[in-house]
Length: 183
Length: 183
DNA sequence: AAATTTGTTAAAAATTTATTTAACGTTTAG
DNA sequence: CTAAACGTTAAATAAATTTTTAACAAATTT
Image (tube, rainbow over all chains, first blue to last red; front, side, top):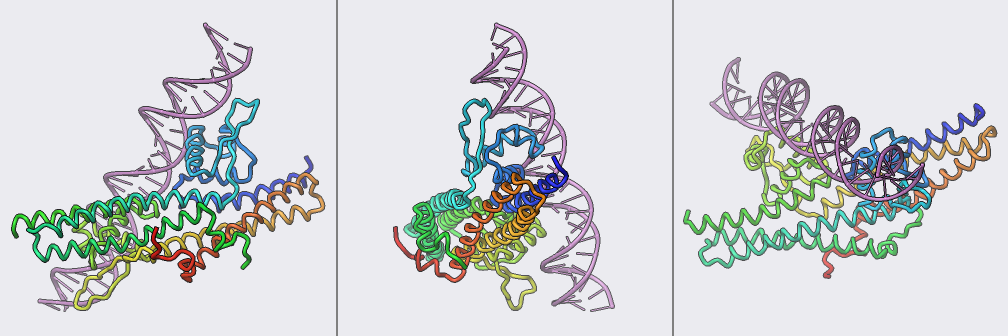
């Protein structure tokens, strides 16, 4: 290979690394380990990869790659692909950020809604019992009412979050905010 | 205090604790420490709190509370309030989840857009240089073009994210998804 | 059927993050 | 002006997470 081709290839690698670094750094905030973040960012510029290629490319252990790939599959940022003729599993990165966004946030928000709404429903029942209890003092009843109302009010937010998730899943949000809209 | 009042008070505390636990658990995913998550969830049911009250209520050290409160102020989930006559600083939890949602996600997404767009712009310049370079082989040029186009395509997503942030900040999103809409 | 390849699980080590203890500076009350 | 109260910073400790090494199981090839 000529010297200038070598230089050009290096430039390409450097350019990719800038983007890989940025993606990996922001992915940290998405609850994945540094290894998984680096892996996804690396795969973003690859057609497909095997576990061994990942290990070589990132200089990390195979179990680390195995775990990272699984985590990435969970949030659907990586998919397993069938490659005939090869015993090794091959994986492909989801390159459409819209799809990653949808899966990740919908998953996250639904978990939040479910967990908090369940707690709220239970707590509200408890508050009602205190309010209904004839032995409760007016002071205690007032307090229970106050908290009950606070929780009731907060449900508005969780309902809204559910609607947001639904509109993302259905794609309706893109009628309101088109994908290709210019500044 | 009578025995039954005591029981009612306990019921109220138990009910609150259910919600506190749920909020704290989901907040972990928002990039705050367990201490900060517990603190916010606790403050959610309080009018206002001082550092010493926090320490007593959560059974943690004062510096831990100090750090947690600062982190929560950063994402605007807690505000400092002036209480005349008291030397101690007092803090109030933001109880409107819509506002917390806005501040947190807009902050997060803007950071992501900024960081990744900067890297993309730099990388694209590099790719253009390789493409323009007369000593580059056709093979290398083709690769540079491919990556350039991939990044160009991804910008659609970041632009969309910016529009999403803008529509949340301006409140326009609530025209599309009203806050009080029923299922 | 033995040996090799591939991927996963489990335990150990290493790293990072969170929390506490201790020390410090600033303010206010006595 | 001294002493106590309050909050923060810095260093040390503790806890949790991430990664690796080692062992294992399944599948495939020879």
